[in-house]
Image (cartoon, rainbow, N blue to C red; front, top):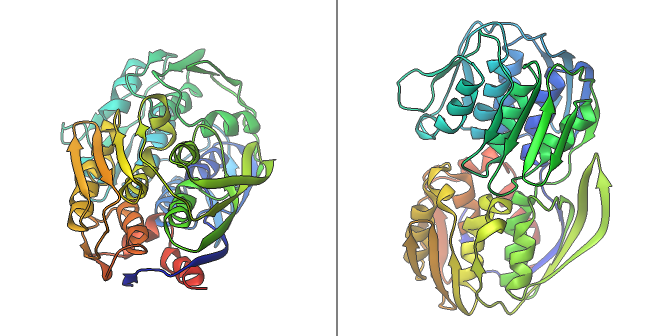
Length: 426
């Protein structure tokens, strides 16, 4: 739908369930004994890809919208799939499931869409190979399709060159199938949903400083998990509430895990009126309602240890920076180049087309904010986070903002445009 400038933004909303937790709930439930029940599950394309992979390996998964029941078969209960496992557009599915598949007695083939076939998998191939795993890039380009599994694993102490929850989780999941202790040390701590949730399922897993450690061969037991709202989805409305005139938004039931919630700190550093209310713990994760109102924002630097806590939110942070006075510098974020699109390039192209003074760098961008934005045709490159970030930009832009593809939002937020319609000019 076309987006036009909003006169006001008011209301209470709930965003879809956390994508990271939804993926992990299905995966860990499948390799646990007994029933795992997820409420608040993200019924998006990526998470449905995870369900499809485990169904193909003999796991009974019943889904009704955001309610999912997984009938687990234990650590060694998966069956050899009769077809290629289709991960769709999901990098999380690809990298995490590879750790599980590496420990199986059978060989599986993973593949996905055109985007997945370009995303770097060498970062998991290297540690899994060091564990003795059979994992092969079929085209010998360190990308999918991948063949995985069929040989015993050895424990590993791995120093990861990147701070990546997907890499860390892949190695820890493979470690469940190794006889001994497997650890991953990162340069900066990445999101810790795997450690929190695996502990709840009964794994002997702990984190200390930059290192996460797991003991192989646990008995995992099915759990009931309430999935909180995804802060990556809430981020669009956090920013919208800060930059739109006459805005007063309450975003309810959002995961505020500090390894994920860097956007809150950045918004505060830029002078945003943002408040956490009704803070609580839900299924081991910190949760709160987030209240935002129209704010006078100023530029800041976004770099260093905070980057892994907001990597998926950087496109919409760039939009926020475009609406702030002064200069915002984003750096240490070269990881943006290997997401669903090269997000340094796609953010720069679209913001320039809207009239923003923005310069790309090797590891981020420099944004001179405060200039009026003008609506344009947004080139999404089939990247859901680009589409949603620039829908937010369209709420403060003169004229009309349109999109070459809106359906890509279904990856993580199928009702995104409907939610916007419910709060604009109310």
